Length: 229
Length: 229
Image (spheres, rainbow over the protein chains, first blue to last red):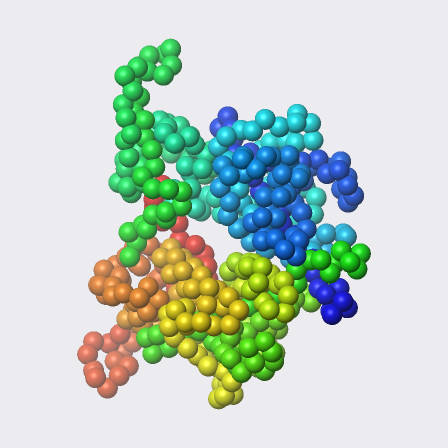
């Protein structure tokens, strides 16, 4: 049994945490404390223990490598991304990594050093350690796909929001401009969002019309069935 | 290092092979030759070797457990489904299984016993060994989702086909009827399929109008971007 087990790959998890910040999709990296790639920024990840699920291991990666408290982890949207299995992806030996996609709205206080939010698009075109560049690129593709037909965008927003805030999240993730008026009509037509209330005062000193506050009609990830068939 | 490795899960693969046969979505099962669950029908699967990728292990599961030759494996569409990780999913010890979705059009000759095509819907509501019922149910959901916005249906069809043959594949997978005239218009409008040729004779003795043969415009899994945004 021992020999049998040793001939098989180790299972790890790596977590791609995204936030939308200042009109930029950002990914969370930490500076590695150990070899290999000591001192280099990489995705948080751990080897999976025999008595924990993959999702639990992903949460442990965020608490051990990023220092997030458990309460914060509850505010994070988690989704399994894919298994990454290149034979030589880890110089320590054969490791299959199940990557997780995590989306966050709140921006936790974090130790100023050894933790960084970096532009996801930039990271996906640079050389992170292991196969982390490929994992980030896969996560971006998944997010860009899902935002088109689900309500996943709400993971990046407070419970109620102005339409231009939601619009900006979509533009940031898709990476191109969207007509604001058409955008509002389409999201209402898809029954994704609803009007929550109309504020009596404009939120900024600039004045203008009092803003409408919207909210998503359903909890995170009730998939919108588009009317293709 | 030995103790470290032994504390971690084994990585396995399980493969959900679907075909559409006689207006039924069917999944391929084999009768287990070994304990646990000896003699019971289950998905083909193997433990992943230290020097093989997950996809290679999935192909090995089909050659070892189903007896498929390598040439046939090349005709199968493969896609990673998800990792299944319940702590007690395998009575032999902690095993994380990365499941694969495989779609096939050609129906290979197979040993008549110990291999069965079963109704996927029926299997997903029955008790297969391990967590294979959950894996099949997840595979059905993935397929039903993808057929709505990709050209994945072509995996179940020859290169050219009549519109009613394609229509039947969609109805079978989605599990409900679709208006044939609307269906044809929508698929042409989405630019998914194109007219290949008009046969000069009707293909059956029933007569009627000579049939139009269609084909998919792009290779398998060029995702159709729907016009939501």
